[in-house]
Length: 434
Image (cartoon, rainbow, N blue to C red; front, side, top):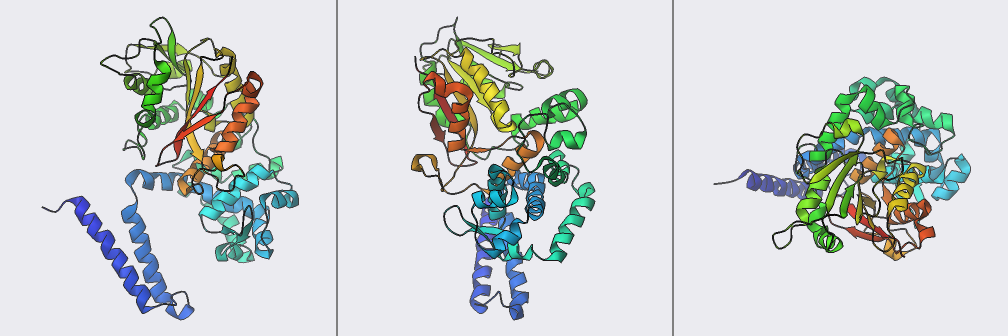
């Protein structure tokens, strides 16, 4: 009996065969006289992409897609397409010409490269592609401006999508500088609020906050793109918690939501039929803690705001899961410094579970990773920028972030990166010496 998977595989092979046949019949398929075959090939390629796309990836692609249009608008405002159509430029050169922050230029260029508007013309050099050169035309530029003013109702089903249409105006007003606080981001400009996005949702839009917690629990309700971190980091986790007694704090899940990560970590400590004896603590805002329905009774629930001093001192592990990508660098460093003050040198370990972007252009080979960021990773990066002024970070950016939070002053041990294939998530492990 043929299964659905078998049928899908046969369809994929059939599509590939049709593409190869069409290309063999029309070698110069991009010539104007061959446009009909080009369109047919494009349709076959689109169907192939659809067949290969997993359901969760499809939802993600739709939900985050407005960030790509946002990048087009900002690039147009800064005349990046005109500059790159003239000759290749580095992000540093573009920042000097446009007076925009180099870090913002880099993030815009990454997405433009992933979507085909620019291409690398050597190390740290970018040039416009045919699509990028097309963006120089007055008619095309006018069309994107009209679209940004009129299309918001078409995509207002998604919070970040709606805000994206206001981001170009936000950057024009602030001189094209990355946000430095949680309360001065495109989110506040759109909602006309002084609250950061999480507190806004908690106080003004609890339904969205509930949806966020559900999302974090289940990744759109589907299977995760990659194995949970405890499956490939479990041995190291058990090693770190070995010997922790029942009166000692083993694991503090900072801003851990409904406790899904804390519970998975506790289960992962199982060894020789026993779980870790130490205490497991879940921390979050009171509104979130009150919403926790089902949680292993061994996990203690406590109210805590990570912008305040950490009350639990000397724990074996302090854990941050997908927290720091939500916030600008100064806020992240405040969060990290509060944890550093609670850590016991030579004993406590900070584990940061987050996306780690690859960067093949880094001078230090050990910090490069493999290849360049995927479109999914860049979509997530821009979503963080829009909603909270946050960022997805490369190995170098993670290392510098931790060092800038005061760990460097405490004789920080080397920051270790543990990654796995899939969605680019990894563990950043940080200790401080005696």
